[in-house]
Length: 289
Image (cartoon, rainbow, N blue to C red; front, side, top):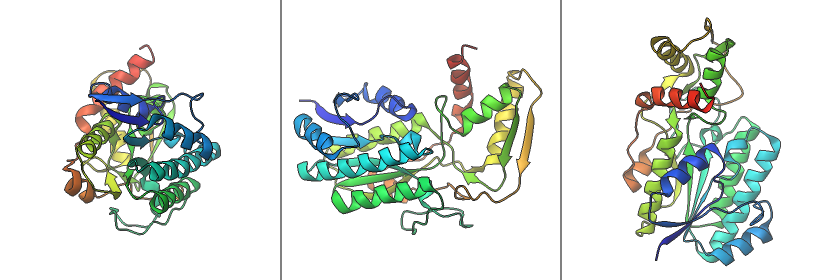
């Protein structure tokens, strides 16, 4: 019998990447629609879990919309209700979180043991969801991610591409540091976790993942610009302005140590650089160019 896995949101950039990878696995994949379950309401979530009886839940619901108040409310509600329902049914839960749980201090790398101290509403929502899950659901993984980039959605790569190829002024901050991680790489890691959990792995708690290739926002913007120039893709004179101010809207560093996920699941970090040109080509293809 196929392993039954529930993915809470497949119609988002990360959900689509994960759905694509999971379709190639021997898994009974549950992809609920809006009419099937309301993740904001405890009774609806509990009824759906009891009816479908998944063996593992991967929760990415509203993770892509945390920059809005509605997205934050939906994210926290879904995480809380899922944690309770999974605990009642003894179902493991993988929940997506992010580096925004940390403060804007000068620390260059954040480990799983560091104290959280969010500086934004987004970060506070992430922390509240993690705390609810830890309180309610013993068998859980809260997977914090760093900068996630891809050819879809709103992320650092798509914003820079839109500016460069749209003839707009582009800004990059030399004080912000991260380790860009592609959507496909995140999906690879999640599939790896599912496979080992389905085989009996019993490792739970807070875990980190980001690519093994750190850079500043300035360095990423400049490498992307050089790539566009080399590929003769620019249609207008680029305008890149470097900012040297502290950004209070997010932590100065999105670089995460990934020791726990490596030790527990053998996950090895990959570089984003070989994926940059394919991502640019995919972004252009999406726009019909």
